Image: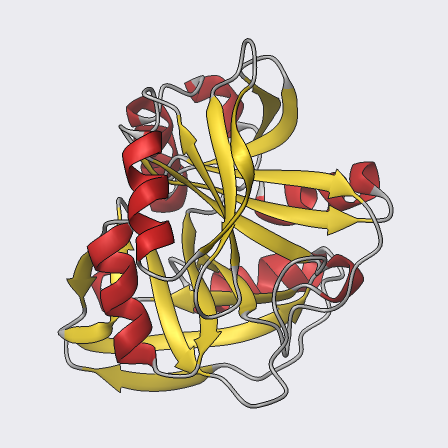
Length: 265
């Protein structure tokens, strides 16, 4: 059994996923989201103060929620809001939705409508942060912190198939209501049907999975016919080296694969 499968099985057990399902195909750990903002340090502090997370990698322009990093990059005057894009919004689960909605409103977010209590699901509200990204705030006591990535697709079933075939995960229903894929790291991928625009150049620039071994990952993705949009690059960070590259997701979704220093042993 490879080390990747062992880690997937362990993460699956920690997340309450069926171990046998994790072992059926190569499954990748969900890793990060990159957001484009006018001032990365200001945006990171806003999220820390109002949504949560802790600074990581010896930097104050990125936050860790569980095993998922939210990283902030400088935007340009042409950067467009995420709403309506192929990566439409991100979901964060909190313990007191009413209090958090009031807090983000006071901190400059735009609240889109009222808090809704969806029977059989959870309470939720949509906001747009001060930097142009749409967020879903929800109260799922079983899954607090970074909760999901929500895509828009003209063909959700084909898009689900691409992500499942490419990155594995467990195809299941969230609370028996929403079709999705659950990844190690306890992150859901959800998809709504609709027209969209590419993520590059939007405030949610790209989404990312972990590559425990870069060469093995490249070979795996090549065997699946995935389109590569960059060559692998090494970068040194305060906490060690990373290796990363980009691939093309469905309908213009920009996707990054990253191998971190902790995996380079």
